[in-house]
Image (cartoon, rainbow, N blue to C red; front, top):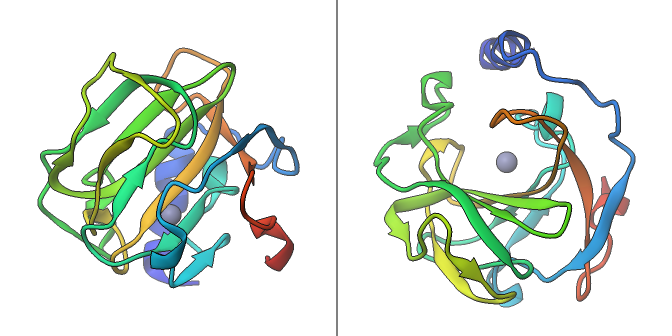
Length: 178
Ligand SMILES: [Zn+2]
C-alpha cells in the first residue's frame, strides 16, 4: 500500500465517513454520460483513490478541456473553480475544482475541472445535457480526467453522503467490468 493511500485513509477517518455501507446499491435514476462518448479513453471504477464514501465513483479519462454535461436536470448546490494546482500528492486532496448538482433525491458530483473552467453558478437550475464546464486535472489527480459520482446525502454536511453505482441510459453498466 502506498504512502498516499495511507494518507487518504487517514483523511477519510478524520472526516468520519461511513464506509461501504450501501456500496452495492445502484442509482434510482438513469443518467446520461457527463462527457462526450467519443472523447472517453477509458472508464475506471475502482482506482485506489476511490475509497470510503467514494467507492462507487467513476473516473472518465478524457483530454483536458473536454466538455462536461449535467447528467440530469437539477440545481447547482456547490462548486469550486479557483484552483490551479493538482497532482498525486495528497496535499492536493481539497484542491480539485468541482460541481455538485442536486436532483430529485440524488445528487451528482463532478471534479477536477480546469482553472475557471466552470460555466454555471450556485443555485442555477440546470437541464440534463447542459454544458456545466470543462475538464482538467486540478486536485488529487494522476492525469486529465473527470471524476463523476452519484451521491445520496444522509446529513447536512458536505461529506454526509454515500456514492451509488451510477446507471446510465446510454452506456453499459460500468461496474460489470470492475
Ligand atoms: Zn476519481
